[in-house]
Image 1 (cartoon, rainbow, N blue to C red):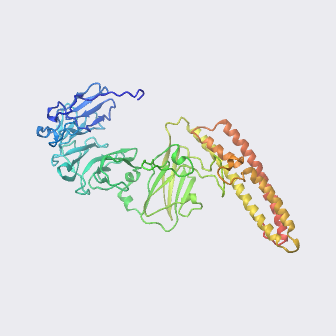
Image 2 (image 1 turned 180 degrees about the horizontal axis):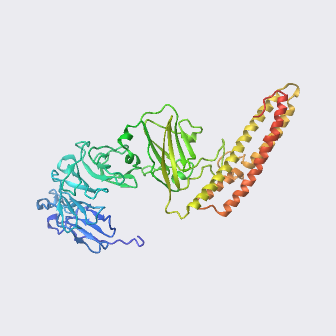
Length: 572
């Protein structure tokens, strides 16, 4: 990679152009298998009609099998018709198409051919045994999947659509190929299948992909059902399970990923019969970006795949949509509620939408935001709460009197050098910042509420006969002026658009909020200077909060006594 130099380490670099397969020393298909040993990454296998092994990055290759195909010379002539013959080496027949070293034993290797044979070696290639299923006719063995749970178990997917036979051919052995059982119940007779994969996290959970979509079996292939969901009708050529996600390679189209197989791993007959169920979320990587970033929606690019959301993904099942309130709460390890989402929320940001059937909710791992007020404009500052530190958390689903709780872990990004103490210090400091932003914004909201009531009281007093309300108006104007002066120190009241802070200096609430962005810019302990700036800004805010408290505790009661004497409603 450093020099961008490439080296050709072909197994047998004899150019086959123009030659039929029968005249070649080795036959290789265009998509011949190249597989690393799961037991030893220094061992590399490749297969033509013979299986080869290299232990020196292709400097040399050694054949470790005889010809494992039917080697039918009548089917190894030039392909194509009388006008154009295709002898480019991509259409050769009688080749090993599937090669699968066992994840349990470095000496066990399975091989399947495009002419319907399955072979097995258990001594590293010294001897091979033909273990082809007895009822498998000549076919293309497209995938062999050794079980990740049992060394004697393997699965085979084969196709015969080139023979105008569109039936699925799936097999399972539990005794190293001595006996096989065909496992196609539930699959449509005309949906041929190219690939079968076993889930490494749950024994007996299988996935299959074919010409018309993806299928799943929960009982080791005894019965299949569709898992297509929103997947387009496209041919599936391969499947892979990685980190509890199912990845599908569609022929000539794209990759599709079924994010989070957690519900399938935990689905049992009892769960399927239940009226409601909360699945245990899988552990969450605490990663920067995505859901942890800006406050706006994530931008989607047409034609480009979308990453799964950052955060804790929670699945829950409701057989029927409840009539009463449904709550989803996230708690820390000490059972303290962090966030509460509800179908009857106190604020729009806490809204929970549910439907009958499977529901998914994503908590972005953030603690509650700082408060806001209508029309607030900030420059380079926001009100998002801090991201949870790595550790143990819980989610609780409540439907009426019924509730269930599940635990999950928020795991530290292994690429981050910050310690747990560093991240905790950052979190604690961001909570302090958030709370001061809330105090500032709540003060602005309270000032505006009181000013509105003072204005209303003054207007009502002005309507009194013989100027009886002049004193009320003068006192209201005096208090309003003091409140406006406090408000102007906390918030830039001249802001009308997002660009106004370029002309009018930002005030305390914006300065403190901006400091949160600086502190949260990386996974790191807050800098000493950030702490000093916060202390200065916090002290300056406290001066204004104390001024506000003095007005509310002294001036407003005095004003209320005055308006009561005139029988005018007081300020609340």
